[in-house]
Image 1 (cartoon, rainbow, N blue to C red):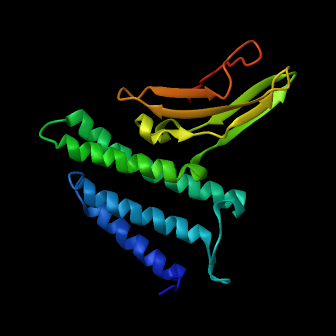
Image 2 (image 1 turned 135 degrees about the horizontal axis):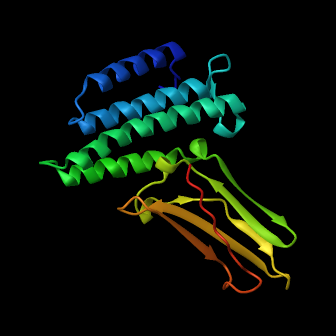
Image 3 (image 1 turned 90 degrees about the vertical axis):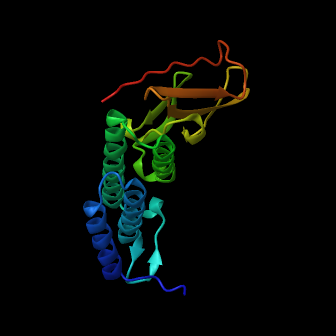
Length: 202
């Protein structure tokens, strides 16, 4: 009906979703996932909705403290979901692996859709003719599988021959939870297009 719910109603929904989530067994992964999605929606709505103007703000227009709060909420929710399926992985047993894979895919989708809120740094700079790319991510927020890879901001610059080159970046984890970083250049790598990658795990 195009009427945005009040923050008090959203808070009530969030509380009920949290109560339902906590009452469910970890075996009820589908229901837990639905409650988790509902909680994420409520937390996002609480930050993005302006009750005075009855409008929803874009993430980029939030104050730094609001961005950090929303990012922390999303990271915490994803970490909780990962604890559920990591426990299933360790136990194995008579667990439906198709259901398990579907659960991981759903969590990965949350990671991709939340990327703008959970990324820390993603920029490039030039110094003395060298391009440096800085892309900081939380370890557990990188999706599994190439099809769900996160895409960093492109890096565009000119070579010494004044040719414009664009380099793109993607990252995902394999089945062993090892990061895979893909770097693609619009021109073949040469002495004018050199690349160095450093990964620091915290």
